[in-house]
Each structure stands twice: as C-alpha cells, then as structure tokens.
Amino acid sequence: MRIELTDWGWRHAARTSWAVRDITCTIEAGERVLLLGASGSGKSTLLHALAGVLGGGQEGDETGTMLLDGKHPTRQRGRVGLVLQDPDASVVLARVGDDVAFGLENLGVPAEEIWPRVRAALDTVGLGRLPLDRPTEWLSGGQQQRLAIAGALAMRTPVLLLDEPTANLDPAGIRDVRDALGRIAADTTVILVEHRPELWLDLVDRVIVLGPDCGILADGAPAQVFTARRAELLAAGVWVPGAELPDLGLPAYAPGPDLLTTEDLAIGYDTPVRSGLDLGLPAATATAITGPNGAGKTTLALTLAGLLPRLGGRIRVAEHLQPPARRRRFGRTPDPHDPGSWRAKDLLTRIGTVFQHPEHQFVAATVADELAVGLHALGHPKSAIDARVAELLAVLHLDRLAGANPFSLSGGQKRRLSVGTVLATEPELIFLDEPTFGQDRRTWIDLVRLIGRILGEGRAVVSVTHDPDFLALLGRHRIEVAG
Image (cartoon, rainbow, N blue to C red; front, side, top):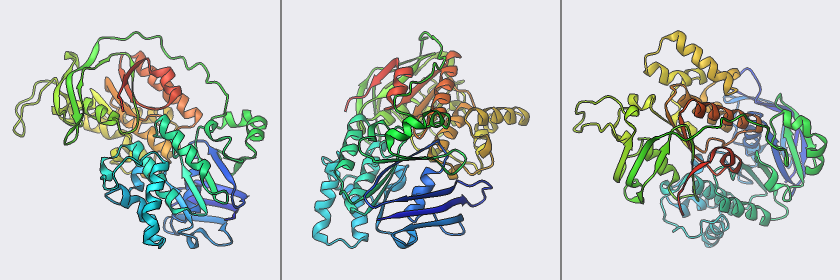
C-alpha cells in the first residue's frame, strides 16, 4: 500500500500549537521505515492518523493531505494494523485467544482460519505456552505488549504500524518481536516507532526523523542519516547508534541503612506468585528489580510500596520512616511497620510510586494541577505549591504544556509527568516502574540526573526496568525476580 503525505499536519483540540505539521513524504508499498524523533515530536499522532483513528473535526484540526492508495485513511480501516504505545489500551476481550481473534473476526476471516492464525501469532511473539482461555487481566505489562503485537500480526494487513513495540519487553521478548517482524510478508509496509534504533537497522531500509519544531529533520537510508546528520540528531534528542552518553555527574554515594526489609514475604493477588522473599532496600541507593515479563516484578514493587496487600511474611520499615501510631480504623489497627496498612496521606511523604501505566495515576485536568495534587493534600501554602510546580515543569521539560490535559500528552511526556507527581512531595523511598519508557536521549539524561540528585540527598529509588543503559548507571543493587 502506497502512502502519500503532502504538507500534512494535525493540531489537537484546545491546543494552540500543532502536534505535527509540514510533513511531506511518500512511502512505497513494502518499505520498512523507522520513524524517529524527540519525545513529543508527533510520532504517535502520525501513526494514529495513518490508522484512521485520530478522530474528526471535533478532535482537532487537520491540514494538508494524507492518502493510502489514493484514499483517506478513514476509508482504509481494516487494511492497517496498529500496535499502540500503551499495551493496556489495546486489550479488548477477557481471554487471550479471543483478544487475538477479535481483529480477524471483524475482518470476516473464515472461522476455520482464525484459530490457526491466532496460535501462530502467539507462538511468534513468545506467548504460545499460554492457554487460550487465560484471562488477559492476569498478564503483565510486557505480556500485554506481546499480545497486542500478536493481534496485529494475525490480521496480516498490508500496512503495519508499531508504536514502541518493545518498550516494556525483556530481552527475550525483544528478540521474539524483532524476529517476527523479520518474517512478515515482503509486500507489507511497516512503519516502526522506536527511540533506540540499533536493534532495527538491518531490518529497515529507511529512516525518517521528525523535527522538534515540526517538519521532517532527516529522511534517507539509515547509514546516510546517522552519519551526515549526526550532530543535528543529537541536538534534537535522538538516540544515535554508537554515540556515548556524557558524564552525568552521578554522586559517588555509599549505601545507607535499610529503609525497608522483608521476611519470608509472599506476593500476589488472589494466590501467591512469589514467596519466601527476604529483601532489603538501603538508603541513598538505586535498587533495580529485574527479571522476565510475567515474573512478578511490578507485583513486588506495588507490595513493597504499600499499594498491594502482602499474602504472607512480614514487611518492616525503618523506625524514622514510620508514621505516627493511629487508632483502630475500619476494623483494623494500622501497623507502622507495614506500608500496606497506612493511610494515603502517610504514604505521600514517605513512599511514592510511579505506575507502569502513567494514565492510571492522573486525576487532574491540567499538567500543572496534576503536579500540585499531592502538595494540596499535604496542606502546603499556594505560594510554595506554585514554586514547586514551576520547578518541576522546567526540570521535566513540560513547562510549555502546563495547561494541557495530561491524557493528551505523548507517551514519554506522560511518563515524565507521572514521575513529577511523585517527586513533588519528596518521599524518602520512591518506586519507579519502567521510568525510561518513551524517553528521547535528552529527557533520558535529565531523568537519570534527577534520580542521581535524589540519591545524593540520601533518599532511595527502586526501579523496575529492562533498560541496559539505566541498569549500568543505576543498577548497583539488584533484585532479580526469576522467571
């Protein structure tokens, strides 16, 4: 399917600036394109437009033309497969097999072909061992991401769009997805958004880079783009293969006493997924929780952070971190050692959590108001709240989006906002679930420096992550959750 864009652009409703604009290019049928650009440059918006799901006049303003085989994308639905940046938003049905079959049923694929294609797609992305009736709500974030990719592959559409398909995957999952894309039909047009291009260079024949101020910054063969435009790409926040990170000035900190320890801890929802865990989280230290998708990393982090009840064993918090003794409430007496029994207000300044899916923690109508929620709950004066919010907006590169709705941000911007909402109240122990998801090179560096500053203040950061560069700098203390 041939794709033609002429001076195309889109501005979201209630926004004064364009999400993406002045895009002119032609992508021939069967081309494999790697779409790059800084966080917020409009990559996801462009993919949504190509899939025909961006919305009509009430959702925003469109300029220029976008044609797929001579037709507007809204007239080519069913011929374009889209894997969303947020895998949680892609899950439609309650069972794994039904979810992959959903697209095939909508396309009217004969019944006898559906289930063989479902099983083949699940095998391709490494989920072949899962029963077809496994509830989708039981899947981890990484497994949901594989499930979304399986659904798109099973449809075998002439155009396949993938928005950061490997962002939450473990190394084995990344290999599975890469191998799967290498095996799809040669006449399938593929447009892939990824911040880290190294893995995909031998699978794509073209790189298109969106500029930070709209338009196309670079377009051509991978070797040509990364060699000829190297300095411009680095300045724009693009991850350039082979470019080393600068000295980030991380402090030479020494681990302090444990802020939290566990004894024979059992974690899970209705039934334990892990038990017998004896762990410690030292102060002034970056701890990384690693392991394959579905091993229970997020479950462990939520339990330690007091947001998920433990199923057995004990959690002990350092005495200085414990809240004041409380009277019996709702039939139970809060245990100062166990964060799972604390009030929300007690957690605010002691233990903070950034969820794997940023949208799950947004409650305000604007970015600035979102950063102020915790500060208002603590009763800070307005002048102090305004100063703290302004500081965080600048540090997180969100100052131009202070009045925007949090749900209208790009994936990388949502992630930075979710980190900012926790940092606002300055808790001593911070849990981050996939903190570098969706970050360009510049915002990644700033985020790592910010964590370094937190560690230098004697606080502790615990990160669930698969990011090798992040682990190299902030993974000195690791908790490995086996598969």
